[in-house]
Length: 375
Image 1 (spheres, helix red, strand yellow):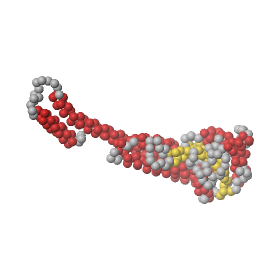
Image 2 (cartoon, rainbow, N blue to C red):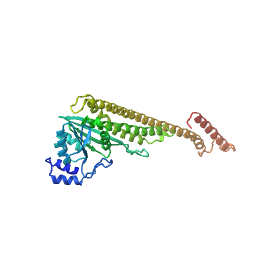
Image 3 (cartoon, rainbow, N blue to C red):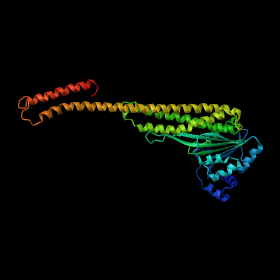
Image 4 (tube, rainbow, N blue to C red):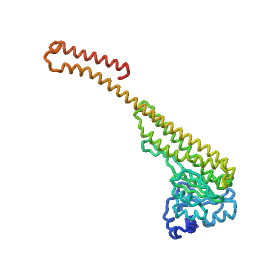
């Protein structure tokens, strides 16, 4: 039976809707991530469903319910069910099968959650914010630098249910890496949770490295010879994108620390040592983001200072030229008055004398302004 049939059988366990209605919804749905060869081209929210025993992949049953029953009878394996943006109807039967708490189910379906770790009986519910760097040829005031998504993880004694939101953060390659290390995978669902957390946090470090290149580019532009002409919109855009990254990274510190230090029934003590390593990486990413924020503030202040200095220089130049223009304006204004009795008015050397006075005065002012750096 196909996985779409598995989902229809599971959702029939729920009181929400009938079998035909759910089947129609799953056939219509095409929002499946096929970016990796491990993806199954299913017309539903189900991306993959795999059973493991002693770290090795084992054949699944005819449907999801039978697969779960086999794993529970074997007592030692677990099921990993991957979903991509499921609807409430699609998730209802799965929630009933694994006895998931309604509040956690609501968070998993609605998304837009803050990174957190919650315990509902023997089930852990973890929320991770995924991030990816958006490539761009040139940073502008509207460039998208960081794109975010979410991964929700339900971890029980014999199951892992992952719910992914967003176009990135595919877990197909991660699943293959885990399957290539049966010893680690044999530690159970906690090993999957650690692998997901490690994968997400590693992406944080990769994105911060890329963001640093953008910050270096802006910093170079600001401190260039014509830095006062740099666009402050680039700096504000980076700060906005950095805030988006900060919302994903910083709140995850407490949940990862809890996984690394607090005794949790479904987390093997051996796995907790691995979570401490993840916690170190998360802390490093958070520190880098804080440093970037401070650096952008300094760059912005430096840019504003450069603008102020440039404006002062412009005002000094304008003032100097106004002083130079004031001399001929004053002389010409005086001799432009129509009085009959004025000194030197009828003297044949009066005009050359006036021009000479203007030239000498303007030359003296120009040299003085030039010497003082006003021109």
